[in-house]
Length: 470
Image (cartoon, rainbow, N blue to C red; front, side):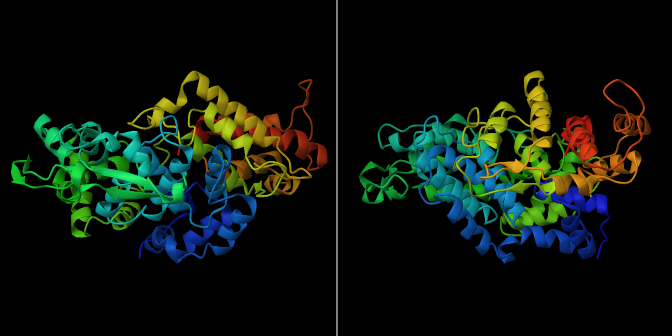
């Protein structure tokens, strides 16, 4: 059983979730690497019933309004005891990128629940559920795909984005032809949905035989009367699919992969896991999170936090308050800053999803990250409560130490632990010991110091380059 350091446990919790306070990190340290991974990945064993009841008291979870739908998901990320469940739901939302700009918001809510329910199933199962989901049938025009007039949109994206990619991730060879696109489109004809009792929150998959092309189709050199289900089974069993999924998983959870022999070997190593474990997403995740690659120096702080990781991560690491009750049902604070930082939930920019990594740090969005940091550092609980994360005076007092240097160390440890050089630590420490006129003052832990200087230090650390990395 491999041991786990505090920094490694914090890394695991940030990547497989959104980070957390010291007590959660120490719990993982005590378990060791493999058991800590199991605790996060086998989340169905974690009892979330009380949390679900609390959500039901704070939201209309079955029939939310558009803003309530987005806020409900933020609340799940903020408060769940199953962080990997929500992280995987976010991963699949980006992978199967679908937007309310074309799809009824109620169907986006249903799709979100489908992604959550099947997040770590066999990939075949998840892909079938998403393919038959009403939001996807509308988004990629499956509902207009009928015998005699096939629509190729879903057939193309199924291969290009959702499963194999245009070219094999290892060999570079093309994975499909234009003929495959056309033939696969014919296989998916007749796939529709209906609303139960005309309820927009209750869609049901519907197959219409008279609109399905049941004649023979030639796909990947094989000829048969392929159905949509057949195509999904064939694609999920292709080596190119395992390779592409590994690459997508690595670039979201571990580090970007290069076109090098070493990284291609990494893809092959974990593609073997995908096939040996019957296409199980859970077992692929378990193998990757427990691997030396995941805990390597290359992986540590090797990604840029996306806006959800930044916002939710800061709140969870600090032990921020988050009320499910209040005057409003929407968390306007979180939704505003997620949008401003470039990640409006349920509205990825296109079918390819959000661009990852450095694209998050453009001039305009970086400024909004700094603005978020300032507002969060100055947020306080209110009566009656407002939806959104708040930092209580007790939390701030817990970050303070008897000395300025100790307070800086506490802050860097809580929000990472972040690795910064001695000069950066000196600048932060000097901030705590300098008044508005530039005079040197003695650092003393009192109400004014906590309100002005320690909250100010929190703002500064949240703005640091090191905190933008995951």
